[in-house]
Image (cartoon, rainbow, N blue to C red; front, side, top):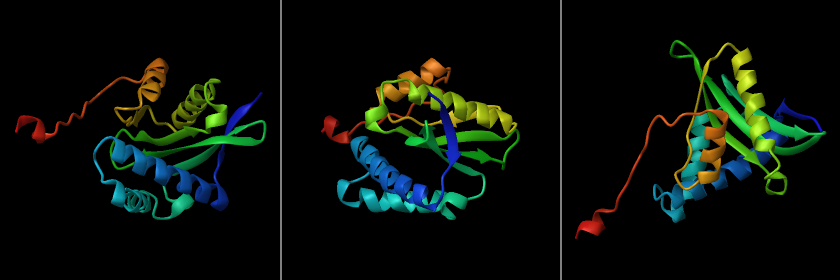
Amino acid sequence: MSLNLTLMNKEDFQRFLEIATVNFANDKVKNGSWKEQTALEQSKAAFQSLLPERENTEHNFLKNIVLNEQTIGYLWYSINTKQEPHNAFLFEILIYPEHRGQGFGKEAMSLCIKEIHNLGVEDVWLHVFGHNQGALNLYQQLGFEITDYNLKISSTRFK
C-alpha cells in the first residue's frame, strides 16, 4: 500500500471546505468559544479570511491524502514567509472515519513534515483543541512539543 499527498483541485477543495468548516464550527462550540447558532457562519468566515483564493491561496498547501489512488483524507498547511526563519503551520489533518486507527494519520503527518522540510522550512506548528486527546497523543508521538496552554473558566462558578 502506498500513501501519498496530492494537490487538491477545485472539486477536492469544495469537499474539504464542506467537511472542515463544519468540523471547525463543532470544535469551537465544544470548547466554548462560539455559540452553536452562529458557529457555522463564523467558521466559513474564518476559512474565507485564511483562504481568500481558495485552493490557490499563496503559501497555502491543500493536499489530499491518497492511498492506492483513493482519497482517504486531507491536510492543509501554510508557510509563513513574513518572518525569518520561515515556519509552517499545519491547519488541518483529517483521515476519513473508515480509515482511522490504521496508522495513516501518522504516516500522512510524516510525509507532510518531510515535504515542509524539503521546502527549506524547519519549524512546524499546529493547534490542537483541548478535547482532542487522540490528536494530541499522535502529535506527541511524532515529536511535537507543547508550547502553550490556553485555559478558561466560567465566572459563574464564583457567584
